[in-house]
Amino acid sequence: MPKYIFVTGGVLSGLGKGIVTASIAKLLQARGFKVTAIKCDGYLNYDAGTLRPTEHGEVWVTYDGGEIDQDLGHYERFLDVKISKWNNITSGQIYWQVIKNEREGKYLGKTVQLIPHVTDEIKRRIRMVARNYDFVLVEIGGTVGDYENMIFIEAARQLKQEEEALFAHVSYVPTPKHLGEAKTKPTQLSVRNLLQLGVQPDFIIARSDVPLDDVRKRKIAMFSNLKESDVVSDPDVEIIYEVPLIFEEQGLGDRILEKFGMGSRRAKLTDWRALVRRAKNAKKRVKIGIVGKYFRTGYFQLADSYISVIEAVKHAAWRLGYKPEIDFLSSQDLEKRGPKEFEEVSGIIVPGGFGQMGVEGKINAIKFARENDLPFLGLCFGMQLAVVEFARNVCKLKGANSTEVDLHTPHPVVDLLPWQKKLLKQNLYGATMRLGEHKVKIVSKSLAARLYGKRYVYERFRHRYEVNPKYVKRLERNGLFFSGTTPDGKIMQIVELPDHRFFLGTQFHPEFTSRPLNPHPLFLGFVRACTS
Image (cartoon, rainbow, N blue to C red; front, side):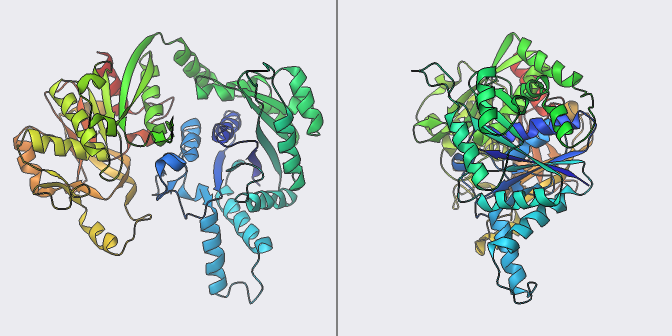
């Protein structure tokens, strides 16, 4: 029977519950257990596919075609396993299934209520994923006290009565600058809120600017009905992959097993320690520019919209002995400013995106990279815009564009996939793209072939548009090389410029399959070119 660990959050959002969940899962995996992780989200959207990136961060794409919460990406990177779309449970999915069940008469005329029908459906979904695992981490999104997650906490409370389960509560311990002292009161109040919902936490994970001292640990333990050893310090770190090691130093892994009545096991973390050591000891620096349009939210600039791209760059840079510096370049700003923005970067990445906003800024960046032999990596929309730029400026196809940007372009070098046209006519946007893992055929004697070292690879996709087959020959005659296609050769998947230092675009998202201990070969090739 699987054992469950529920991870809740208190005080404020954005504390890093996803990293905590992935780190605990890593400690258990390192002890030889089979582990998976689930994320519960309180929003009524069916999935994350139609959410604005600046509002909810990156949309993570699973191997089986799910568009889900970015925290699932952390689970995959830390555990180096494939996580299914079923590991993300939203209120939208739960209520949709409950109403469907009611319409189909499955409740036999009973009054359908939050308890037991909605909580039972949540428990069913969790148990469905949990089969064949030793441990299941369940992260409950949001903050204790939010209306949206109360029903998930109630379902977790019930599940603890029925199964073997623990609760780890992640809470914030601020150190106000004018005081210079860590304050535990927000955590005390957060725990009180959790207790009012019928949940006694088994661990407190104390997020703070600096490591928590024993005085504060004792105080938090007293107000939480816990031992001091059950309060775990989780200070800010430069490298998120250090968090499992910080937890291990405080004995969290063994304490979890002890609370489940299990014997101690040694954690095998040699490779993980080496990774963190290599990242910390890197002296040489490489500066990479990411040209994006989802950085800004009000006065603030956020990286969450491109978190997997950033992590993939880090994985590759650390492997090569470099400390990466990321320069966020707004594509909207690049529509107005000149090439000075690129003078300090060693390479440019143009990641995925949708719609017209900032497109010309991205095209300007691609043109600069092509003309100045600056390493370039284009991902999904970035690859499509590389084709647009080449068509305009090398093939001299005036007004060439993607029909996503200009429906009436005289040269639609990027156009809708044929089967997508029907869906958009019906306004079917959610979960209707070409999604998930697909096979890619690599053309021999290409840059892609050298980097992969394979004839066929599997990569993750999320797109509606493709390079228009009608223009492929004309593009190739002018020097563009399509080095990856679908196995039948009908859809262009990789494009490159053979005479360039590194100019490569992919219709897929290689960032989703990069791992800290196994960097993606395309990112390795790109960063290596940036450092040459």
